Length: 625
Image (cartoon, rainbow, N blue to C red; front, side, top):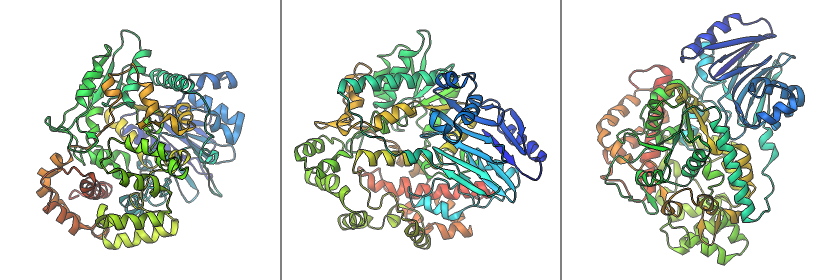
């Protein structure tokens, strides 16, 4: 958690006191230093200070860099400072880690950087000659920056436009440093270098199955070793699937015999839930219990199922993060995992968020590849292997093989023809009013973007899938993670976001992920001996938010009353289609549907619209919202 202010006209002494208080308000000890006309302030619990650099995060290849640069391996800020001295603008290309860094340059500029794949948040802005950077928007407002909501950005997020610029913060005049980028703030303007995106997707790796498995196993071991180094008592968000269980097994292999790993799982509210969705299961806990029996050092804990509504603790996190992320409508149950880890005395919470983008990818882009290559036998085999897809074969052949290869405009037309009720995805699955939808369409047309569900199709190639995966890691997730760390007093690390592991898996050919109808082939091979065979071979997916209906149904009258209050807010009344949202609640379904597309307007559209109003209430300090 860090911040910096630079004013070429004077040293902003008052800013130092303000930022020290801002850090202290979050229960952290502030530290500071000056370099030229810049003042750098950070939380001592998580930041490192060097001669001119403030560093939040960690460096994984610190031993290698220490040998090259002659700097203490345990001082990431000094390592980063030395890397800039040695390599200048390309310093970040030599560093593997998870970090945000602010460096005051001799020419009076601020150099801001975030690592690829994942990083702590870092925002920037300016008022007159004063340059500012900080982890969260609250620092800007403490310094007197105008707290002006960007209503267009809020509408874009409610439209589920995943192609919008990740530099947007939700507030006018405040921008985000994208992942894998360097932003230089100086008197002449703002200059951005998206160096990681410029590198492109690496060429395909050529290796035998055994060589790949050996290499991935070693990289996973390296990732777990790096994660365990600073942890005294870790916990892991553990599911009944492949990714987190594989990580759990590897962590346990590297932990001392007397240590224990706490695995925390959230489950559906109803203990009688057996899985109503085709190809999915609602309950993780029975699989987690069987997995735990194979690992003596693993202690598993089930969170309170009653937690987990779409807005559970949303206001707390929105207040800390100062940002609106519609995805929090699906996050409620995760609070139980953080709460349990804290109550168990853990200092780190681990996850396996990028498993599906690395070793556990399912190879779904293969259908379009095989269709283009006229590899009909392989295409048929892999389509038949989609056990979680109840559609007849001919539908899967057209939807997964042909459709991704069509131009987007034609895909949109086909989908409207087949599913007319979902023809206008904004009217179907967003809370935006007719006026807001028209305005959004105009902006989207100008920048060449669209709602995520409009003309959606799986990627057409391994390279395209990798590009999508990288793009989807950006936006407001880092601010939310930092807010959760502050709320629960933990540090968080996605073990599978270890850059050498992700980059190696992105180079692997399609056959490593799907073959002979077996999806996630690499993950299943890697999992041999690590978990029960029933779990390793399970083709169904865990269904997130399976108990959404049980949480939302009892709140119908409460939410209708809330919509009445929303209608009294002038901007929200223009932004949201409150009449439709009321109708949805008044005609609330009697039960959860076995067709997920029937549920999405409630779990996404309605829930996200209500969260947008809560966020506005938090920002504007309105008790009625």
